[in-house]
Image 1 (cartoon, helix red, strand yellow):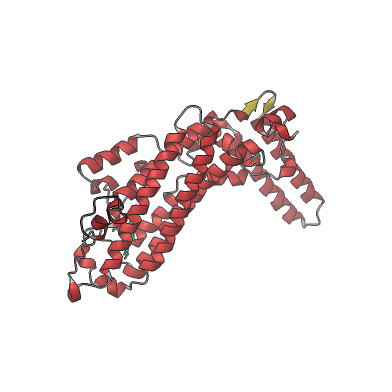
Image 2: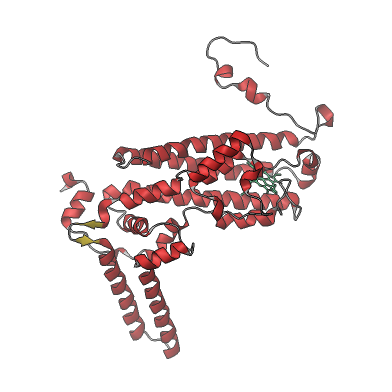
Amino acid sequence: MSEKISSVHYINYLSLDKILDAQSPLSGEGKDAAHEEMLFIIIHQTYELWFKQIIHEINSVMDLFKDEKIDEKNVGVVVSRMDRVNKIMSTLIGQLEILETMTSLDFLDFRDQLSPASGFQSHQFRKLEVMLGLKIKKRHQFGGCPYHAQFEGKKKKEILELEDNYSLFNVVENWLERIPFLNIDEFDFTKKYDSAVKEMLNKEIEGIKTATLTDSDREIRIRMIEENKKYFERVLSEEEHNKAIENRETNLSYKATMSALLINLYRDEPILHLPYQFLRSLIELDHKIASWRFRHVQMVEKMLGQKIGTGGSSGQGYLKETVDKHKIFTDLANISTLMISRSYLPQLPQNIKDSLGFNYTK
Ligand code: HEM
């Protein structure tokens, strides 16, 4: 394509000859070619490049978090890398609009030629899912065939190794378990939080008792709060929590959940700002991937209706199942159920406050 250039130049630095020569429409060349196939190829290639960047960022985040003791300044780096990943994800969601300028009739001009190729065979997408923590037993399967049956040789080996490795979910869980704030000096967080919740719910019951309500309305509302009490009791009991893990109703360990709760409740303390932002960025990533999945389903609906996929799945039926089921950090998002207003938040003893804040502001 270009003349040979010896010094570093835009063209060779970016390997543009390779990238720009890498579009080979199967529908043919010149006027025989299906016009839309170029867009179809370029958009998939663009996705794969962004997947590469996301994997690069997630790998670095996992690296920074794997040490027993995390250097505090690395938490800021991790937060900014997660922010970048989330911005890329927003672009990936937006890009589907470009592909939707192709109609289902345009797609049929070349669809048969690309079968049985499918996004289902995207090795980087699978790598990313597994690295984040979507392990095989959590997946929605189809046709009794594991997802990695799509790969062979080195590619398959790499996926199987990732399945056995620590994921971002595991790294985050370990980090949360190591956070030392749950029990400092005389301050036992879980106990304090438990009494704050009881105080809050009892006050709500008192309020209902004195409100102008019909007897049956009053009874229903009190019953709802009693149910709520039981919910909190279940969440705070380590034994019940472990049962929920066994029953696959939850994944995050008890200790990690309590730490995440503490970070969420005391997010105003300076030392917890970045950990809180990090937890938020994980929920954000889960939501962005789910949004991408959902927008992809909508696009598939427009292009294929009820047709089956070229990868052999039921098409949109299969894809819809993955939107919620393949989320990784739902337990972190569910922490919001446990929030109580600042007015009920147990006061931190001054010595703990000092160790969590900037002492020089005193
Ligand atoms: C005309 C456009 C598209 C159609 C009709 C389409 C259709 C499908 C279908 C039916 C599946 C389910 C597997 C199968 O049976 O093939 C699938 C999976 C997938 N597609 Fe697409 N797709 C399109 C564009 C894209 C684009 C632009 C990407 C970007 C990388 C993409 C990535 C994926 C991925 C990663 C999966 C696997 C999802 C999973 O298993 O959770 N697809 N696609």
